[in-house]
Image (tube, rainbow, N blue to C red; front, side, top):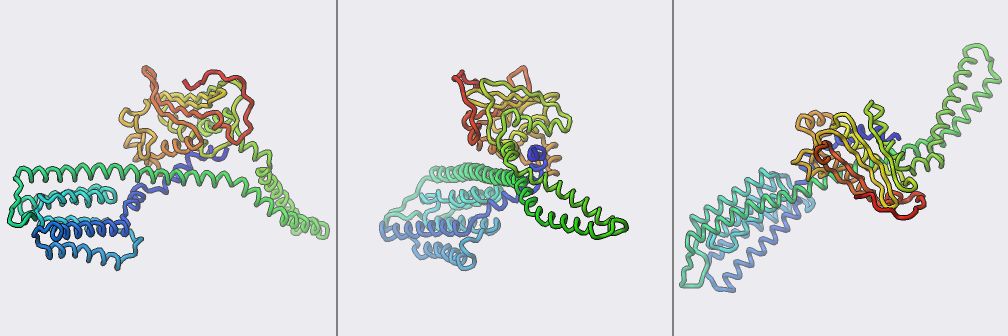
Length: 465
């Protein structure tokens, strides 16, 4: 029961150690080896294209100047390899500078080979795409504006597009303007889309890391009973020796006087230590361990509502089912997840919270209802996702002082509960009723996994509907 009583305190403790900005900052750092490999690929493509146009197609172009521009990128890549190890992660400033250099290098190469009339002008999208997946939106916006500015410059001035000797290919200005529009729109759309996808992946990874931390701490707390029993066993022998020596001294020393009083006090303290060790040792006995490991559905519900009753909040419980009540393994993650959902319900409830615990031969489910305002329409479809909070801005500010308010509570609860084989649905009550509903459904075999499964009778209709 210790874990249920300290669930909320544990969550605040864990969240206080999780800095969302710090996690995001470290997750964005671009690995040097990744960027260098991409740039080598771009260099190889540029060199192949220039050489192919000059020697394969025989088109005239400023070959030496083109390779001079490509050589600048080669020099930067070699400098990076010499200066830093491959595993080095670039700071945002250096990564932004390198991507800006790539845009300017591409601009110089396109200037020499036809400007936006060159079909390779769409490569302006590449540095912006890389920035969107690894850098902040502000830096991506700056690089996008730089790419669009360079594209605009290439519309106004550039060398002729390489073509057959003696022929001059000049595309209409309207067509070139269309290419510029495509580059601008492609830069904006690609940047926003790539940033959104990468940001969702980062948030999910960070939230899962926070979940693993919570689960690890829950597991650590659940092992304290065993550690206490082991410590009691190890301390038993020296304590018995102290008791024996004290007893022998009490027979040889006078009972009156300061020495006799000290010996009497020592014997009392030894007995007290023995009593404490006896209690600690009982935690590791098989009967107690079995009691903690196997738990009925009704006892699981009582465990999660005990902290609420301790603070004076009355939670109504309804239990019903068909056949024997299911027994399952006590899962600290499930206890934590259900406690978190119940905490959320009591925080928003107007006057009452109702818990229904039901079972059939095929399913086991717990439904937690409150009579509060329910989930806001703008977050109802996203509730349970990482960093989606049901609290107001004022409440988040107040909670942030205690380490909460990051929008990870329901996500962690959902993750821990679904790991046990359950399905969690978060909805609002149908009008005219109000309030939020959390429904957790296990297949009965999943709930009873690892425990002595009660015999089942005939198979009545499912309760899920």
